[in-house]
Length: 262
Image (cartoon, rainbow, N blue to C red; front, top):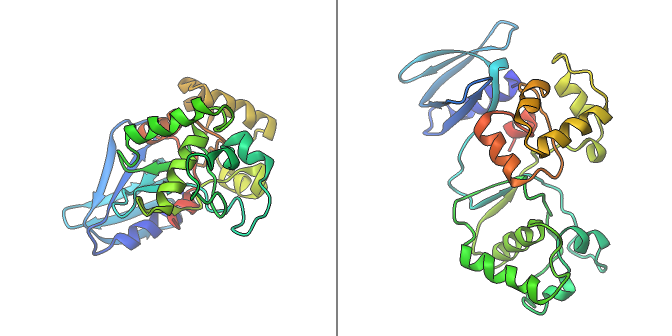
């Protein structure tokens, strides 16, 4: 992980009760940091001296594969910040029904739902509070799709986006959008190239797509052998299983610079 990003997070923790969880390269155990008093960068390397109320910690940030904090003020966090459909849009884009749901058919069940003005997201690009969406409510909405073919697109992505955005509109949950994903076909290649510089990773985009394919099939051996942990290995349309894998085993598909500013 980049030293600047980690120092930024740790500096914000000084004198607060905030906690930070670190995932280290090749380690399954998590490292918890709390009660941070001071943070100091050591020389030109990636080393950081962290002073807490209990200990002095010398940390090599290049060995940190991911760092995250649990936010208790939110129910749902979307790892995408751009509004997909403007609030004043007059036409329904064809991709909405192809990837998510058909808003015209949805009116049969929820006439008050506003489909415009949202950031539509992948089902693997999120974080949420446990039980934010009840099982009863999920199955109820899922039954709508069985009654009206074509209401929801394939997979669970349309269902999930409807639940989150409709519940937020009714003020049942509190959500936030965060700029944590980088898709080179959308944003350009510069950030991906910069994050991978110095990591010894010289693959072309077509090679990256092959690696991404292996990640989506949960080939953990390939994942650990080929993707640079200390840089960002980003995947588009990752499943929720891949997200769980990233959080539990170390690799991250999100930019450390974006994480520091979220």
